[in-house]
Length: 505
Ligand code: NAP
Image (tube, rainbow, N blue to C red; front, side, top):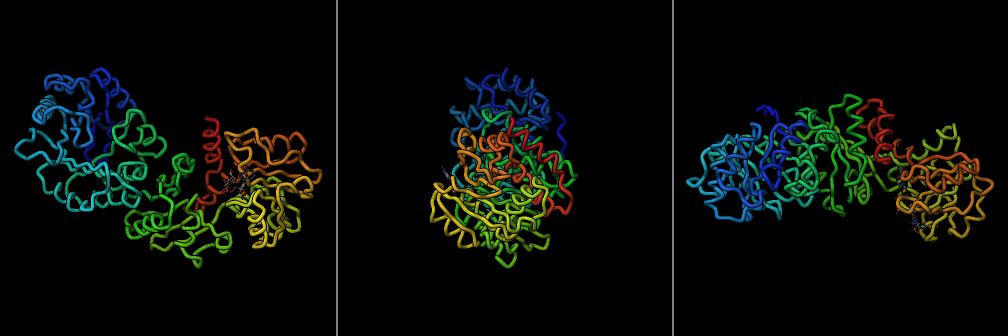
């Protein structure tokens, strides 16, 4: 491993419980393209003597950070402070490039060597983060490190402030899933490094990504000062396919962008706080946000109806925010067009050709609402079938449709059926919202994309009807977001393949 001083280091944390495991992990880290390793000596069982620590460090590749984290700072070393510092001293003398020494160790007790002075708060983002960071900056250590638990991504943005404001090489990380962006994007802000684990099980801190995810999913090597930022806001967001789709699209289209998951707790306060945080830091170069449950209405409220696509306003949901370099924002809803285009493309018709066609929409939730609004816009004759009849009626009244309960499905006279309920979705793939496909139906569109062929679509296809999978809608909305943000044609096939690979995987 050849650490490059100017590059933000991808540092793999080694957490073996024996020297042999540490060496095995180092080989994997090296093969995985890491720039350096952090050897967590406090993970060794039993704790090493100073000569044992020295022996291990001398067998690791150059560019090692030696850490022996005490229990008081979230580590595993439970021995005496003098033993711990002796281990670090031995590691330094054995060739560790850096030793990580907690900032509360008195200057006179610190081992000799190149020191990373570190502070950790596993509970919260310290109120006095700026002062703590300034204190580290004023210390004689070579590198500053500050890691804190973030309760939302807006706190994670403060890690970037710390890196930017420091005079010395600095690592600033927000822990937890809410802080993941601080780890992925460290390279954009010229941080000294970011930490990654060989696997989720081998991580040493909450929210630490794997080496493979950083390199392959988030394109670590291509992130630099000019990278423009994007992300998906949701709760939960961990299983979203959007980071994989958009990062692959950036790669294929040669766009210098990075797309990250943003776990924002429900409620407009945390949503607004993050958006305010982004807009007040123009230097982030944040250009776009996908928005999913439960924040689509918050997005509309934040952006303001006057800055949104009128149909998005009528639907009451914004799933795409575009941020201009001058800080102005725009809100769109790519869901409704994605659904209508998936349907029209399959039928070989234009959107306007939907006028007067009889469409049955099953479900009156978020997806149903977007589709009913779009069908109304294109003057289709829509009937909503919903379990909770009053909800269906309310939606129908808003958009000039008709509504009934699920018991009326057997009397359906539609040409097109669109399923907007989760019936038949993974893992309950045995379900179907329709017992049989009515005679009048020519086309069945299931908005579910997992599985791609639901039981409903299987039955429709067996009965000789045309079918449309939710996969097409899902890809369409991502394509529309990409094109809105970048003004370039989206690499649709690449994006589609990512979804297919994920679903099959
Ligand atoms: P939602 O807001 O929770 O609405 C769910 C709807 O389904 C409601 O109308 C609900 O009826 C009905 N429903 C739920 N369980 C039911 C059951 N067991 N029997 C009968 N009706 C039931 O969800 P959503 O966001 O609209 O999502 C609905 C589906 O759309 C999801 O399964 C998802 O796969 C699909 N979707 C696809 C895409 C895409 O890009 N392809 C995008 C978004 C959504 P009540 O009103 O009675 O509760």
